[in-house]
Length: 64
Length: 267
Image (cartoon, rainbow over all chains, first blue to last red; front, side, top):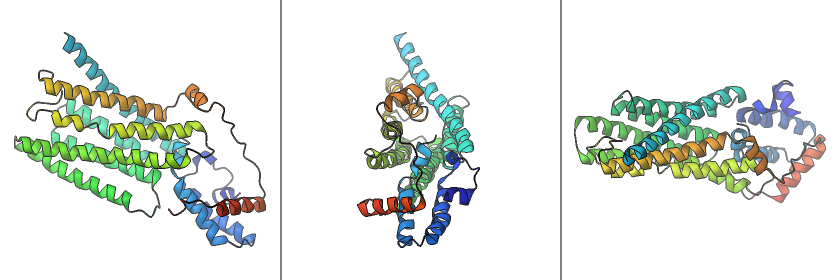
């Protein structure tokens, strides 16, 4: 849902790159968590960014 | 007669190697456009430049300095491809250090190539070979290490086996290829590469062509995994269907994963 919020409904999932995923996490996922009154907000966002960083090569290796 | 046949086989190996660079280069550029993955542009351009430089040298007699500069650009682009695929936003300074080393070796290699053209000397020749070998080792060794590091992390994760196999094939093939210039230390300094009339040169040519051929097959297999091979690798694997979670369920899932603790989150 956050991907749709940030990138629109017509962006194919297999064309989302690292920068876009990072933006989705930093902006719309964070915004949704704030709206849900999520308590461990910053920690969760950082965790998601770390996971993205760790597994970034899968974006290429899993799709080419 | 027998030597001629062997030499022909070596030439076929070399042509296959160069051909694979062209095909993979073009493939990367097409996929970069289709999938919006800019990192593939670095890989694609790198392989195309490498192929152009070798064809230029072997067929059109491109001079040594221009060939070395083109190859250096190619190897630096491989490193940039590795960094943009595996190491974006990471805290480590190692990716930057690797680039710095590669640029330094490229500069040294270009100067040594110029000197080699001007002054006939075994010392300059072997210094040039040393810097070139080290640059190639760093370039493909870094890709091998990066791929291996990720493979270590994901091998026990719930991922399609063909993806894990891709990492494995990539690190094995690029690790072996990182040594492909080592035989050049046995090339007689005053004999042209590929000169079949000299036994050492003949063997060096064959060894490097064999490395290249192995790389061509392995690297092509990495990126062009046949459907049957993918199916074979995925045998027994049940692809998980994407579940629809509510936001609260997703948050609970993330909390659970964070509390289970990932020892490698500091990156």
